[in-house]
Image (cartoon, rainbow, N blue to C red; front, side, top):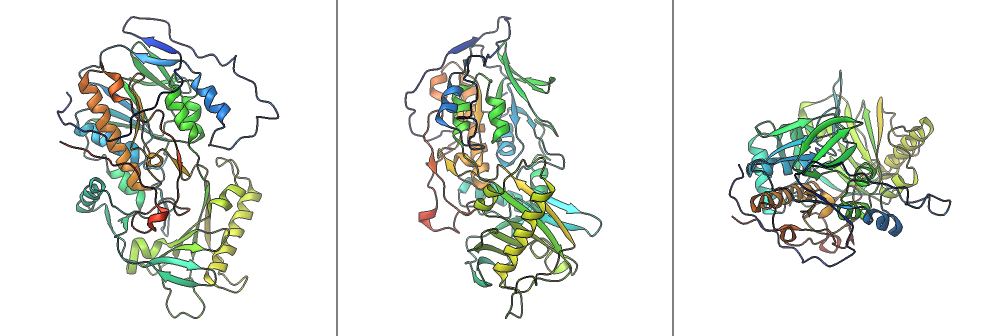
Length: 478
């Protein structure tokens, strides 16, 4: 049963726009709707080349021509939600649905664990340890601060006391103020994600699973993976993005949801993991001045961090494990299919990024020690570069929602807040019985704005006010 806990979102009213065709789904058995693309224009040499994720106006209009699914069946007393994506947004959504008495299943593609960009790689037998995506996070929203305090009490996260700052070409380092606090996973970022659902009783997790099709039928959503049924649900949440999400939504019967997803533009970032036998050096310094640094003025590097010092501190005198993240420009210029990186590209990017490290530290050319271990990964859909600036999107007619950091910003806090907001909004919709859908439509026509921040994301409190996107107020009241 749904818990009686009221939440409200303060959002701008929706604007009128193109009204898509409608398929009405009732409780009466009927033939499953099909979506025919035969009338869609075929690719030509003029329209074949497009940005990988940000869609053209023609592509968005084509998406809006989908037939809109409209559920007319009553919302059941005990609804079940299918959540596609097990990053921070999807996990937060599942947790806060559980707080409201709503069951869910989280589908995630992760082979090694949950968390999406909360990735940690451990290489045996040394072992070597690397946070290879999200490096740290800050907390400014009171709701997220409360959540982080709970994680600290559980021993999942702690403050990162090491020095971080900005590193100019030539080894010129300027530390950043110690406030606001920076947080890291005690054992890396991924264990935080894997532990979030450990105490839950109403959340099921399926991984690794690639949901490849959404099909509305007889008042519910049928999910499948390459033809294999993965369950039916009373509502769905899309908690991932990029080309896979666009493909999934392309013939879903959710044109407004799909249209908003297609407007999202994403950067690409290379992650180079490198382990060195000896500490790195900056000429003219007795001790290395930082554990993490935003790199300025180097084409190939935007961030570097010593995982060994960050995660193990003085406990380890062994190998020094570094994560180097590229600039977005370098990622875009050297982008290839991330599932199958050509050897030549791997060698070129690895060499280019190590040269960037050398340049940043002010080392003579060719003097950087050779790492005994390297691993290169491309985050092809790394971070959003535009945003509608709203906590969540929800289509009450199709009983489908979107959550993710990109709706508010590009950081862990935005992802968590988005997941919380959608969970509470959907629970309110379920409690209403679903008979007043217009009251629950959120974000389906919101305009996008450019999103500023570091190439590795936003860190509220660490950026100048002029560089930070201000999102609308999010208020949850009881």
